[in-house]
Amino acid sequence: MQDVDPDRVDSSRFQDRLDVSEELDGLKDSIRENGQQVPVLLRRVAGDRFEVVYGRRRIMACRQLGIDVRAMVVDISDEDALIAQGLENAARLENSYIEKALFVAQVTEAGYSLSTIQKALDIDKTQASKMRGVIRDVPREVIAAIGAAHGAGRRPWEELRNALSGDDAPGQARLLKMIDEELPSHERLKKLLVLLRQARRTEHAAPAPDVKIGNGNFKLDRTPRSLTVKAHRNAPEAFLQHLEENLDRIYQEWQNENA
Image: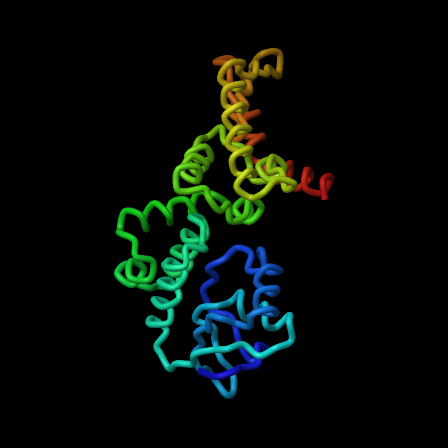
């Protein structure tokens, strides 16, 4: 056990929290009044530097308090550090479902095996697969805007994933506007799901009317994620070719106007 200057501690490659500063004031008060009761785990890296294995919040609290952090320092491999980080966080029950899912995604992208992931988080193959699916189908910016959503388990995130998988799903910009940042994180997720259900009901109950152009020679079918141009049998085919050839120019003009 030793005392380490927090400024000599580097972050882990894998982030296990969306917001490490969440509820940090309470932890700082506790350390200020009672001292740091639980040591962090560090491993040595190049020179006089250390890398955190677990205890990022305690390190941040000590850094802000201007005191050394009490630490156990070990020499372990990348894989053993990953497993220790995952198991510690799982044991302390501080990480939410989406934070665990993001952790699984990071570790998978780094090339670690499924068996290592299972050891690190004490989850089975099916759970790991579902977590990766949520991270794949829900944009990271949307996850960050919602936050950790402590108390929300797998089901609401799976519902969000399913809601975003259809052709009629709203785009990312619209989704971000639907998230009420004034609410607590888990309430943001709950309200977003309510809004998405309402939008689906409205859209299915009252489909948008077809738009006709060119004296009815062409019909546009519009959904939030698609635009289909349908030509009447007597419509000039050359117009479709013209439209196809100029789509990129039209898009560039739209970008310039909305920059």
